[in-house]
Image (cartoon, rainbow, N blue to C red; front, side, top):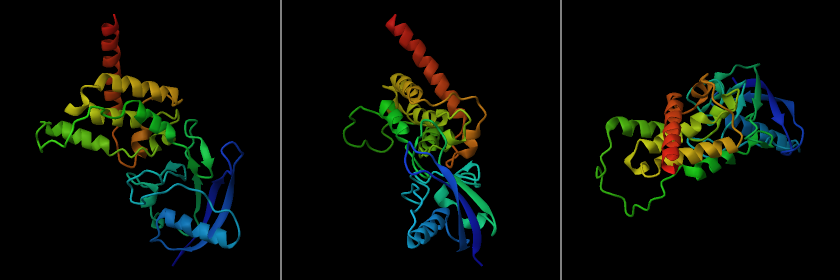
Length: 254
């Protein structure tokens, strides 16, 4: 039997315009649909009725790209932990439910239209230092550069960050510390990341501050909301990396 639902969706035509919640009734929704497929069904019905479909972001629909970023019933990506919106299925809801769907709420992620926000602030943080600029030539032979098992595991775990912005959306301060700490940690524990290690963290933190993200107050909402379960302990590593870089820079300049 299909689900009969009420969707309370944020509608906003333009970035600078006013927005409001609009209620939509959707009937006979299969429990096996993904959340995005349910929105596809709503939009198909709106188009048939001659109404403007709801704008929302999506790409891979496999939990990889992070584009499907929605605030569902007060939680980034919805009720399931370690899950992106595209991996959320309608069986998690009951017929008769009212589901509230919003875009990310953060000054640094301005709304573009409806449920789509501009997350290019994350791109600019990566451009500030989240890379290795040394030309290494051809790929080296396997195991040519020794990396300890613990560091390899840590780099792999933090590289899983998909940059969706759930950490920012869940934080009362709209902090981006979990995202930045994941990107800094990923490179700082590998041999390839050592030559630019200090300037990387300085540039990325400066870029984060310039984008207007808030400060971390260690309440760990970011860790709970992260669909890839990035650990908040990386924020401690980021703070340590930043302080060491600041001290070394001060001594070098003096």
